[in-house]
Length: 317
Image (cartoon, rainbow, N blue to C red; front, side):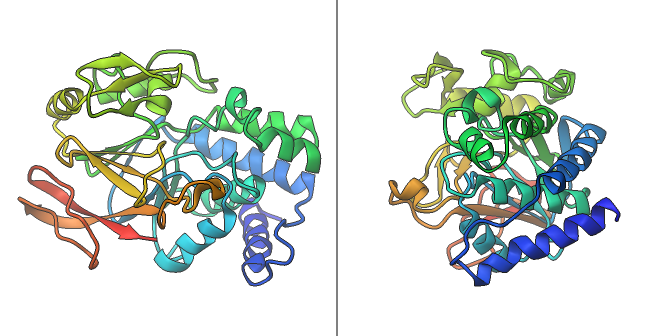
């Protein structure tokens, strides 16, 4: 059986729980998971650390093992390949179905490698997901060796994406070491996430209203960065917008730096503890250059600050 046929079969089994929530976990054999991991690792390694893609594409934030909320995104916005997707990381931990969530995403990546994109988040790292649920899930349902196989794949995932040369996307934020977009390409893979540097900051950094420049983060890793850093970076790279995830947003999204940066979070009612609304997502599609981007739905929000070759709108999911 080809890897694509195998992925199609697994997706059918993973999707059927959408109609049968009595059995929330999908029975996936270890050898099936290993086959998925082997194939998707090859695909990640064949594509660059810095992705460059064209619209139309839907951009989504953290999903954190909230499998039914992920299915809800696809129900509302279209299952691949009817919609193209870019996810910004943090597929595992916290939620109850991390394995189902990440395997479904990997299967779509296998079938549609040029239309379905997955960035790495800070939870796609063994030092983090050992503590927040994924390690325990894999160990309980399978074994530690399979967890190590997942880790090996996470260490090959891209960490940054540019859409139409005007929108830059990552999980976390900016870095004092990020002197050009091309510097992301210098990150060698496979790689664990170091304690500092570009890779660490792309996965961990946060914008902060009352900060100028870079300030050490109260997370204990990476930095907080201010509006001035956003302005300087966008001017340096001649782009319009930074799209990132990593932080819970009450409405599913939040703006920073005069709408030059947007945070999106796609896990509603996060962990059952946060009263955040429906997850946020962004739709980016082709457009002629214009001063302001057009909205695409009643609650869409225009994003661009300068003339741009694409338009992007927040969509409720």
